[in-house]
Image (cartoon, rainbow, N blue to C red; front, side, top):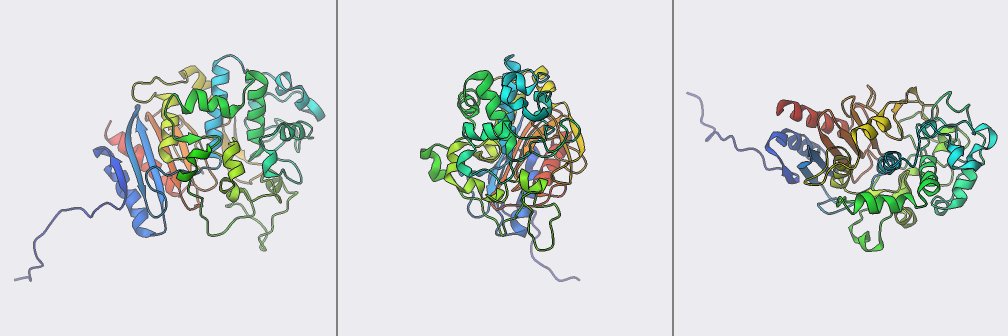
Length: 392
């Protein structure tokens, strides 16, 4: 006879995360908990809305709990892109008009034929300003003036390259020119407040106690931590990656930890929020949330999310795919179905909508992460989509 090892039990191990998960998404919670178990320094938030209802709202690990907010980097571009979508929907902005028709100064040095569509798909050839901009310059008209005066670094429309920080200047100046308001004001009044979105482009002083600074083990010298740099780690500030990353003035990863960036709401990288804020924002755009209807029409979503470019990014040296402002999934960044659109942050944060599954997704880590195809955000997204498919 075999030795008894005590009574058998099927009681699952206690969850390491806190928050809620609908029964059909328990497998996603288990995956999130496995990340927490593997790395006790790991902390993050995960939120998902499905067909307008919240089905996941989780946080775990040290230093990023429920109610906390942190930097999301280029997820900010996705939030700003939704404001641009509203301007298109309102008839104030024509994607096929030239940038110069709204912003005459932008037409200097052969940029007069650059369309709004091209500029907002990283094709204008103005990924940065050699020598960089001081942080306090980004939300000012001086930044727009200097950008408009640039000679493009490639023939506009012939290639694309990630405009890591200047994309925000382009979007902000378009808002000022066509709406007479700042992009940050429009975001706050038309999106954040009416839809109770926990995401800010311009963090008010009274929200500062909720902010948790981004942590990182090392600070890359580049906006593109996965791309190759010389063995000594030095990034040439006059290289395309250096120009796009505002080298040598600032490190991309340090941006949201500066109050001037949080307060100014730099729409390229200064957004502060929670995973729930990102997920709810994208759900509000596409499915609506709770009893509030979607703020974008299907026709507007189609216009904004049609893929414009795919292939080798001139600045990062990686494969990328962009719609108008938004990132699109592709084999190297497999975050959703072909109907998905959103934006990642250089720290590993991710926010997107996927109309194929009716979801709004938000993931925000406290400590900066690397990895795209096999990153935690992409693995969680795949698990969410699988749960949706199995429960359909």
